[in-house]
Image (cartoon, rainbow, N blue to C red; front, top):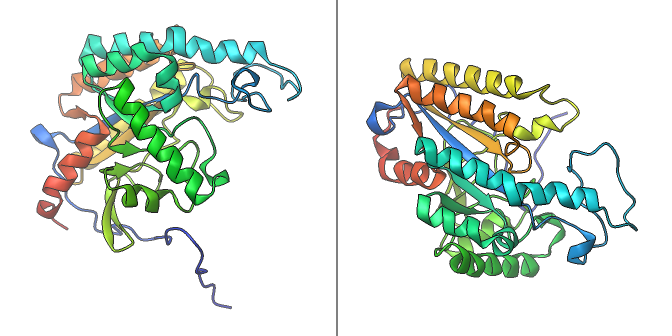
Length: 310
């Protein structure tokens, strides 16, 4: 029996992409790989009884789950660590090496910690929307999601001095998210996909839209997941190995991009920051790696994609 994809709401699946002939991309200054450091700044926007939610947030790196009828002060304090200490440790690290990053920031998290928004402006990091708060977009109806997107834009303008030009949902988008972003008209790209090593265009309601894919593989979330990293050396090892392989592909004529996901409450812990420092030092020392904000990658692609050979 032949399997046929169903005609259902949302984007159509693409199993081929660039296929066997990926474009021969060239990055600025003849870089052979581009590294995008993405800081998921969520702390302060997560679910909590203190915020009026009916449950506590998980992923708190504690060995128990407290019932939703109770307020979990320990879980709250772990998220507070990311906001109070971890995010500033990471920001100082990036400034030390003059590495520009993309902050996947939830609007509410920035509102509750305005010094982060000020630092992003001062240091030139990209404020990219991680939604209005850390929420599941697929639980919102279309009009609710449209409203939350608008709240996010207005909030970013107040806390960072600019609207977000990129978008990345918590976990995943709804079937309406990309259409709503294109409909709003001010977003250059979204990162709600994990399906390639290069940016690509897709069509949304007859309009061309750029996707800059993300990754869950090179992600500090693996420190706390069941099948995750044993320690900081594991994080460094997989990131180094990935960069080495991507540089090899670049020198063979097909430069790619690498996305690394970081969270202030996890990577902002000193022992883990040391592994990130080690990776940044390694990447910078190669001399052919471009550490770039996602908006810079997006703009480069928009300006040069027609020059890439296939």
